[in-house]
Image (tube, rainbow, N blue to C red; front, side, top):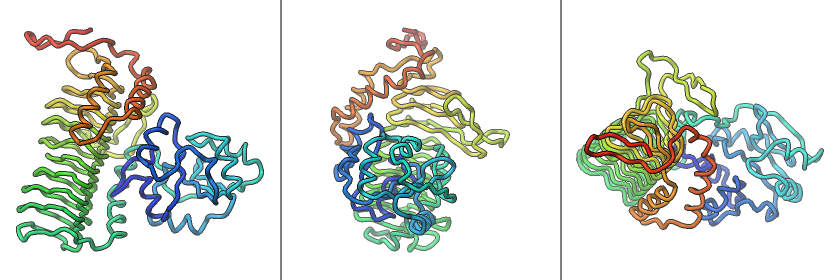
Length: 413
């Protein structure tokens, strides 16, 4: 969860920046350990025995905004765990106690396990007012605010230049340009609703309109697109068409025409031309999302879709409101139901399981297109996820998908 993006950074990056962390010990689920070590080389991962100083525990689901920082600093006391709504929000432990307790439990941290090993040596205090994220649509809802706060923290940033052929509304002081940014002629930047931050090496091509608050990540390209307020685009993305109040995690491609709104899109996703999602019912009623077998009323009238890493959509794909799409799945046509991980869905036949070796080969190809090397850790994670999500695919046909091009029909394996 801590690697999910909101505003101009991930939740973990927000903790590091706002709390001015110089040393960090990460506790993650075992299957994420190897890839986390690869991504965060400067930090220790799942090695609580190396703790040798006082430890501030922070729940990876916590949204660290300006208010949270001030409140946390005023509350923290040694050897105390702080609970909100029955969950551990944060804690502060002395070195010996931290090493002993954290060596005895695994991520995700179980509160009962912590208390069992800590015994009566910690104080429990209940707090309120912190934001512990429970659902992905809460990230989207918080994104607008977090972009504004992130830009306010940075202040004026004019390492890049704007030509006189770029139209700016709301004042150039509300447009942050990092080093190496290129904004082509006839781009419109509307900062009246909030700041616009274009990060290092990003390119905004002619004909684009970006409304703030918005963030465009490092080395991303916006291709003559309409980018609405509340949108965050991660690093090395290609974005076109229309995007509104959406988070695109990074290394993803949505560069063709089509609408993506009130949605969360993971890494290494490819969105085919004409793919569009719905984020509003015709009845204007609240949207329900299926979570762990239950339909949760989001209480919101605008909720789009939630697309996992490595998902691919074909041209002309249409995605209904509140849809969840699992890792590595391929989408075609109208998507009216949640899609399990590693599933080929929507070719006028039963959904078919995506071959694991095919997913691994595809990962290698897409990595190479962005000059990224596939590692053993990447492959191992895909293999783990394939096994871990098998129950999702109980009703999915097993075997290789075959398409009869003479009749334009799908043959079941």
